[in-house]
Image (cartoon, rainbow, N blue to C red):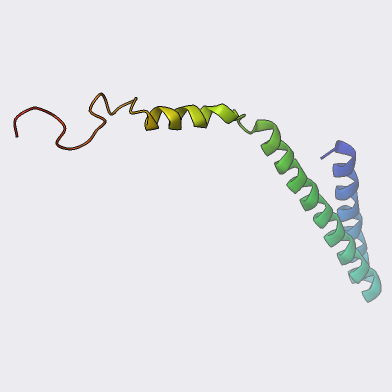
Length: 98
């Protein structure tokens, strides 16, 4: 969220608070309601900007995955390499005593 947007949205919220208070003190229900609407509008805009910021942060900080990284690991597993050893990890294939 740009600094200008933050300031504008916060200003809208604060103006709404002022209108609401003025409406309460003068007994002007229309002014009070308008102030509440301004506050809600400012808050909603701030929330929307924060959501955009979260997605921007997630996109710029996401780990980069390569396409061939997963395919090599699965190919090695199919070939019988890796942790299984020469016997392939099957039961009963060891020539040792039981």
